[in-house]
Length: 251
Image 1 (tube, one colour):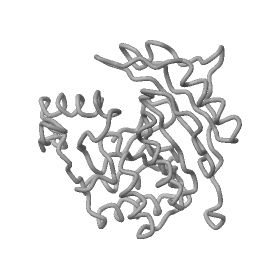
Image 2 (cartoon, rainbow, N blue to C red; image 1 turned 90 degrees about the vertical axis):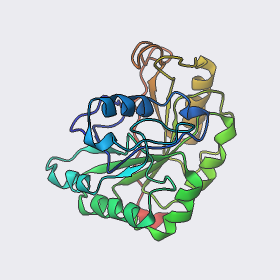
Image 3 (cartoon, rainbow, N blue to C red; image 1 turned 90 degrees about the horizontal axis):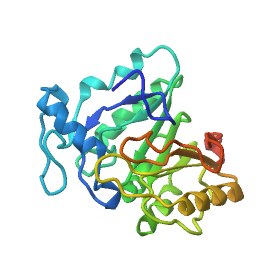
Image 4 (cartoon, one colour; image 1 turned 180 degrees about the vertical axis):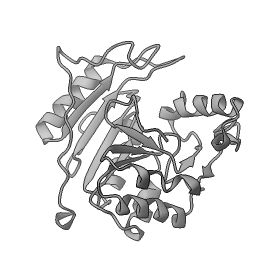
């Protein structure tokens, strides 16, 4: 976890779990998998668990870190927190009891805003009725190409104050998305070694869909050799729109 984050749409990260497994094309060049390998080599205590080499890697096996649960309690100043930048809270190997502990911490710290992002939208939808959803939790799903648009339907079942989509890395067009009930969409290109290019037309179409639907649009980056290599200007301006949380009683 970190007090500061270079991710444009958040302020801090918090990792009560680490590790994951690749499940779709958006995972192919996972930055967290590469970073976990490096952290294990450096002797980091949180990255000692190895994952299945077919889907994961050194230091990237799913691990729970109960000692990290209390970290947000010690942050006195309000901040926006990306939960599990190095994992997926709805991974099958993270038990419901532990997910509930994470939600307890979020509920106990209403001064912070928490952003939770998953690719495991079906499990999210199954567990959502068994969780208490405080108003400071934003819930999102990753949709990298048209083959994963079903994640959107699962997200709509979740009673979060903000529902959002991360179209990053955007690997193909996402035409005619049903953005009803979706408050925010983040789009961005892939970065790092072997990054796959993103077509400007894909981004423009998502922006236009958001404008039409009244969904806040955030353009994170074009991508390239480094995350900031291509900049983040789209048609001469930056798009940093943020969502307006809804009242949970209205969900």
